[in-house]
Figure 1 (cartoon, protein in one colour):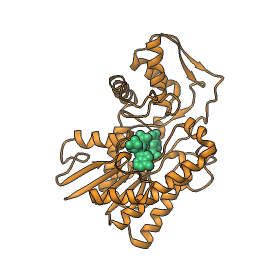
Figure 2 (cartoon, rainbow, N blue to C red):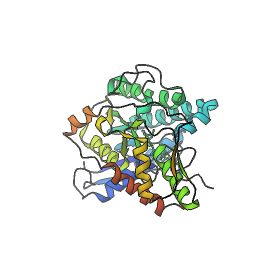
Figure 3 (cartoon, rainbow, N blue to C red):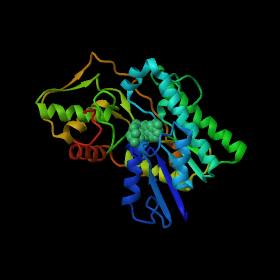
Figure 4 (cartoon, helix red, strand yellow):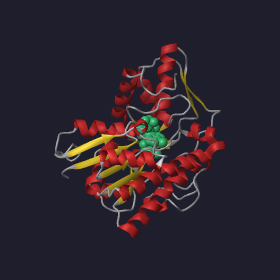
Length: 329
Ligand SMILES: NC(=O)c1ccc[n+]([C@@H]2O[C@H](COP(=O)([O-])OP(=O)(O)OC[C@H]3O[C@@H](n4cnc5c(N)ncnc54)[C@H](OP(=O)(O)O)[C@@H]3O)[C@@H](O)[C@H]2O)c1
């Protein structure tokens, strides 16, 4: 790709910063490294509120992207979604507006390619496992995800319409649970890994017990953000189809919440009292997603071992505690 400008919306977030890390650290010219003639732009919301069509156009006018990786979204862990339940309309509308503006402006400004980001939590609540790319629309999402899931599903619908009507090279990626440096470590609004890292850190600092909600038994697939970044770069360069691709570790690489907590205790070097609060709800036992399509298309991919990825994340959190998103004001 020569004279390529890749615009990353949501470039200041967990996934955006991981793409920046990979592009800046992989050898130049390699499969995941920067290629000659490429410029990568990582846009945050301070450069333009993508809910607003005029600000979205301004951003595109400024950088004239030939390629777009669209990550910007109103996201939140389970609690944020629940807390906003009264205004789940906010999750629905903000994400619809952001997505519609980015897709329409990419079309108007003739971007050669656009990859948008869905999530495995947009899948139906009642569904046959493992999840695969064909099951996105086959039933309502979980109640707690109403707005986020419906808005994200619509991107797949729009991608097909833009492709049919205008031949646009638009597609979408479906990551599972992501973790890594630059995550949101807020104690209330974060996902499970950053939330537990922060909790364990505080338990060590304050000499208090480290209490993990639930039995620790549920299994989840977690993808390290730097691995996910490589998969986005692969999609950008090597995948040209409107149908989405699930970006995940394999079903055989699920880890239990207890394994997550054990690894955090080790990485934080926490030696105090460590227990599970079994009075708290566990959530679904498993929600496995298949990465068969991804691995077939890529001819295999080596994921970072979970413990190594967790060590990198904890290390980053400890070094960046003062500036990380921790919820403190
Ligand atoms: N984290 C996960 O486990 C996970 C799993 C599956 C899919 N995903 C998807 O991956 C994508 C990236 O998620 P992430 O975890 O990296 O999220 P994140 O760390 O919370 O980052 C969100 C990004 O979106 C930007 N943003 C939010 N509202 C915006 C607006 N109105 N206008 C412009 N920019 C806006 C934020 O900008 P500022 O910070 O500058 O405000 C930030 O750069 C999202 O589409 C998410 O749905 C995430």
